[in-house]
Image 1 (cartoon, rainbow, N blue to C red):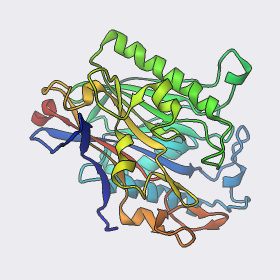
Image 2 (cartoon, one colour; image 1 turned 60 degrees about the vertical axis):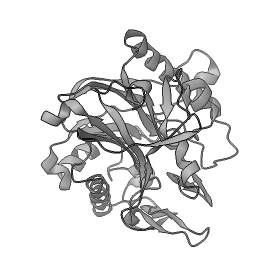
Image 3 (cartoon, rainbow, N blue to C red; image 1 turned 180 degrees about the vertical axis):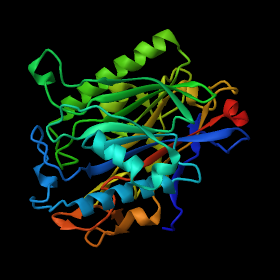
Image 4 (tube, rainbow, N blue to C red; image 1 turned 45 degrees about the horizontal axis):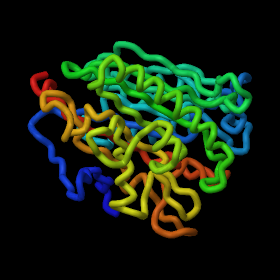
Length: 353
């Protein structure tokens, strides 16, 4: 695979035919999501289970390794294009400190990213956070939605909150963006007793989406994250209601559903010899080019970002695997066990900025 390889989601299947989307004259902007895999500082937090990422741990997580991790994550963000993403959603970040250091102590500094962060109830202390560029995305409001706080016992669990942003892609349209990190499969991608937790989160997310669409049926909504489920699992298709085909009745379209159909050997996360598409991009119909108003923002492409430096040979199972920070307890100095995903949108109103 060459260094510039990405999985381009340029094909939409509609009525048995395909249509390739090409860039028009309008300006483009990118929204990114990246599960960074354990972006911890080396300081022991007595309120969370972060003991694996302190200098005295088996990982021997030192300041030098932490600073290298920051540099690696910034390298990925900067490598996405000549213009870095206007919004970057991030999973598995420990706190606001690591995000602020990422913005201030790496090559991201010149782009003046701002941080959105809130401590979630996750036992390990990992959260969902955001970097955004105020010069390109004017943040109007943000909210963290708590999950796992239902009335019934089976609805009680501790996980990462859903992060919702409302902002203006200056000077274009208002975007509603949800970033997610749904409950884990506990290291097993087939036998899973936590599906009910992800279904519970899907129901909460769908209720928040519906509350927006009730007020404005043409609202431009972006949903991204690590769902720990595939695009065809029931949490996504039935309970969130994100479909893999475009039709007149579609409310949420899952752009990620076509990735496996086009190139079968790669996804966003690899478990043993199996690639999974756990990280996904979903939008409301208002961002689908065939449906959207031509004067508003529309989706140009949705992709898995997989340059050569993010992959290493998989000696045990063949092909490639993500270049991780650790292989077991052995420090490798890589990036993450997930590959990032990118949504590129075209906004005619931004052309004159």
